[in-house]
Length: 368
Image 1 (cartoon, rainbow, N blue to C red):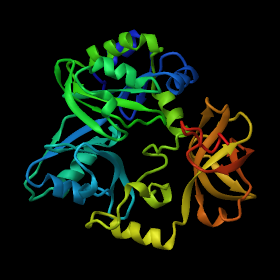
Image 2: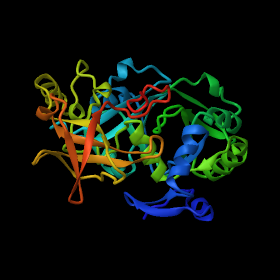
Image 3: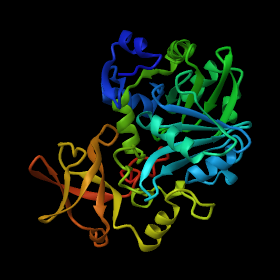
Image 4: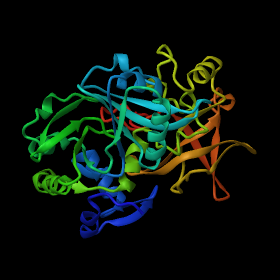
């Protein structure tokens, strides 16, 4: 398995390590509930070194990015970040990505398991263009600080950057740890949060600094377990679950990251047709009765008929309820159906709710 530059830190801190898409990553340091609540109430520290980081530059960099992904680079100002997707010709999702519009290039963050094929797709689309695609994933690394107290810790780690001036889905480049780096304010937890990008050679020092400087704020190392429960509560998709090569952005409810009025890109016409005709199935939120967990792939039942399957499911530490996202046939959703999840041969009633389950302003569907 591949390892991030912080691997030994995780081992020394007693993390339980697992195989995550070919990467040996920490799933927990203490327990999921404790780490989850730390992020909701204070600040959690995550290793994101496994994610892919790709720089696109050259005379036709803008043209390549514009034709490769679903958002409109013409409307993304320098210093802004936007969610987008790389699509197959049939509209299925190759990957979901973050597009960073910087002064001298466009910087993409892609999912770890899709990095190689994403780069290959970009290179395929770049044939004959005056553009350079640099995969920086090995030489650059990243950590994330997430939670309501994250800005206070990040300001101490990067004192030469005006952290308070970085808005949501914005970026700032500057010196971090004595080296050129970048701060972004996006997050994958439903809370305020920052990502720190720096050379892999100093990322261990920044990790240690975060733990020291964040001690007064109750900082805690957090693994993939809490990352998953946090993003599920926040209604954020995970590639391979809510989006796949077989699930398109209309079905997944992710059209905020798709622009149909921009120039052509792979899958555009298919997505436009699905949107016009209406998707035959949709991702929905479910609150499931009882304490049994609705796992990925479990059947969604209406009476004796299977009408979909669970995409992601977990126990919610915030609400102390079983929650799930599910891909369900659209024609059964109109009449507020009584659905059930088949959990290892036993039925659990499930209520459809709006996504996200949680919003930090209190307006999430389980907060009413």
